[in-house]
Structures are given as C-alpha cells and as structure tokens.
Image (cartoon, rainbow, N blue to C red; front, top):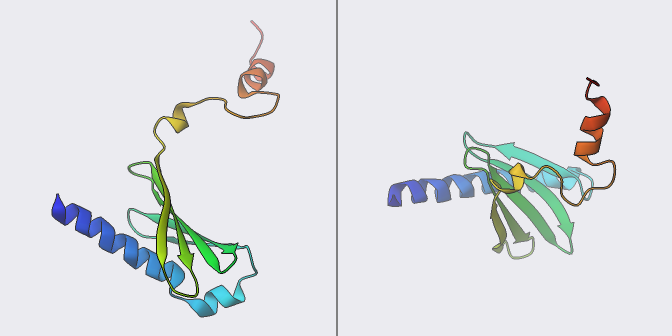
Length: 113
C-alpha cells in the first residue's frame, strides 16, 4: 500500500512539474488560457488563476477522482484546495440546469408510439 501511495505522489509531482516547470511555454500562452498534460493514469489541466496563482486540476479517470491545487508563482508553494470523488456526481441526470431539462429534451425527441 505504501509503495502504491508513493508511486501516486511521485507521479503527481512529475506531472505537476511538467505543467508548472516550463515558464517559457507559460509566458507565451495568453492570460487565462489553460494547458493540458497527461500521464498514463493522470491528467492535469493548468489555468492562470490571476493574482500570481496558477490552478492545477488533476483528474484520475480510472478512479474518477478530481483534485484542485493552487501554486503561488512567487514562492512555488503548492496548496491542495479540493478533492472530490465523482462517482455519485456522474450518476445525476439533471442538476442546476435551465429548461429544457434533459428529461424534457428526451421526451421531445422520443418517437411517439
């Protein structure tokens, strides 16, 4: 178990280094635009969050887990902001959406019997 956790942590930092560690590429990207990097089991999305911060969202598609980090560009400090298992979220059909709801659209396109 310890080896698996260590592997995930090392993989995360390698992935984060790949996203954060290229200041030249970041400098050429317009403010607010995101970058994407991936490893065999993880995907990272980087976004300039303004105020000297970068937001990195790490997704584990196999386990359906999402983690959000903030990086202070001046100090390099990394802080975990949120982690969420998406299993139950992805089972919701309709949440916080305007009309027409997915159920209403389905009823409109469903062949009449």
